[in-house]
Image 1 (tube, one colour):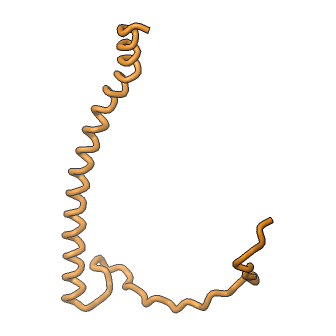
Image 2 (image 1 turned 90 degrees about the vertical axis):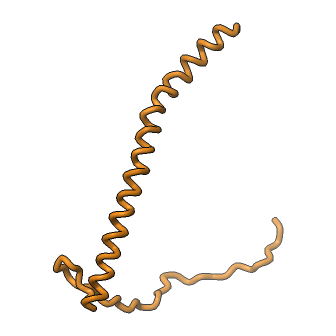
Image 3 (image 1 turned 135 degrees about the vertical axis):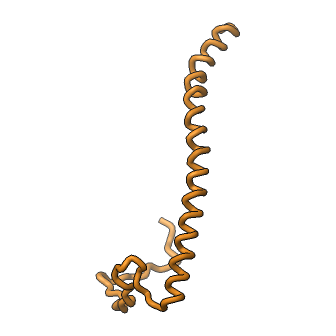
Length: 93
């Protein structure tokens, strides 16, 4: 093949991908800025809730929801089948 046909083939194969990558890259940059804003808002909310819980000593959410329950104790695990240990050194077949 000649150089001209190679350049045309490269433009046909790579060109659409290069053009479509521009809006994708732009949206990723915007998502990073949005994520930073969301992280700041969540950190401020967590600090506010921690201050309220420390000030009142109550484990109830500030919006009047149900308080956090104490975790229940879990029962020991029940084996459903017998486990047989295989010998560590087996003969080669």
